[in-house]
Length: 211
Image 1 (tube, rainbow, N blue to C red):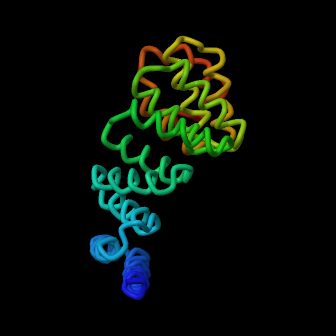
Image 2: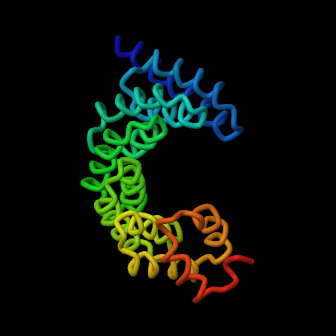
């Protein structure tokens, strides 16, 4: 019996390695097939479930990805990356409340995780929980003060609650980091009535934003 278990483990890892190679080549469907064969031989290998979930995410098969990451979490309850990736898949399915729960678990396990704060902020944005989203963007900025998207999203959220002065400062920081990227995103929101006061001040400070 022990020899059979050892052989199954060995063969499952062969499929795992083959799946990883196919992942590198962008053959996500082929990788999933190999990972599935590996799981059949060894259903307690968290690494294979994790990789299959990653491949499913790449193919936008988010429900299947969630199932795989849930299995990883059953096997490795403190593996924060599985919570993060599951949260991403839930995000894509617009299951924002549940995604927030996963990102919160990531922060519990990995307190300085920039991506978890940023993604949780975006999910809260989607639920119109702007004040709470701002708190997360601020934490993300504390971890990485060069994050253009954190400043920009924070500015948008502040605008939603009419905190215009702080929104302007967030936008100024974003402009200093990446003026071209700001200009691109700014053009998409510049006609919003809620942004008129901010637009006027930003154009006074940065006249070339309309170039």
